[in-house]
Length: 416
Image 1 (cartoon, one colour):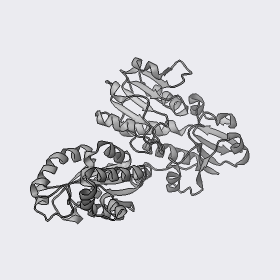
Image 2: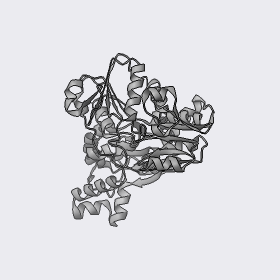
Image 3: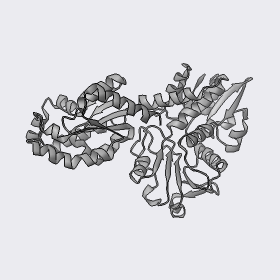
Image 4: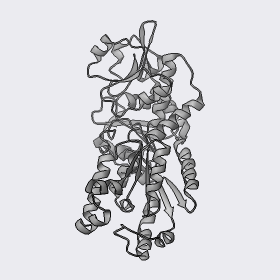
């Protein structure tokens, strides 16, 4: 048996990573009974996740030196009929810190949580020469752990690392029990969660101009290290990065924003086909649902009713992955909705000259009755499009040119 052992695994990308490595036997194994699992399964190689990284240790015959030092296991391999525990999380996190050049030496690091992943982080940060390391949690057990009520004592820390599942799919909107605004010295936030790609903690840190990193790179690199242990093979650096980029690409949503008639619907269709993503056009979806034109909805029910329909549609879809989404032009003015779309979305701003839009024949656009309406909307909305955008494309050439441009910019984005 090969697979991932945990309690709830709907969030996991591990199966996809191991299948890309050629292991089609890898499966997700949910259990509430470790004793029964270890008694009834022939384990060849498994990974272990929340909440079992410490609890599996009594079922093992041996720990390697690193796993013993950490006191947590995320990889188990059968060798000579004995189950041996390893910790490839340490390797994955170290590779992530190296890849992104996150400064740890001489920094104060605050770890949110005190489970197995927190133990791994503490040992790694000690090895990387952090000056101070504290864990903050609900129920402190050790001298290096403090309760949330003592948060004032660590507000000058430089790096924050979330090791808890708070904010993880499907509970995307659960807020981390700390407020990033209180940490005036913070320069980087790491969240080991990778689904969603941007937790509320990371989005809050980005809003404050702080560098942010999710757990996807760590996930892929620890999985590859586990695969190497399972099968006694070596995976090249080039292929490691290829797997990371492909997992990032295949799970991300592409969210098209821009002024009316900037081409969002057209480019969403092309990108959904190019990247095999589910297509969602929010305006078309609302028209299909109501069997009415947008202009008729505005006239009969008012703008507030339409905006409620937009909100309901986003609420029902934003946790999903691998979609190409064409948004209504006014959605950019709804900050909570944009924050939801950014959880898993790469926001692409199609920046078409408002003067060119104003010169077009405009139909079924209830907020645009004249060319001056276009210019007034642009004045209000363009700063918001720029604020939320991950990629900006100036629409001034033909469609094929811009599709190639978007592809190049996405390739760069997904390889980071």
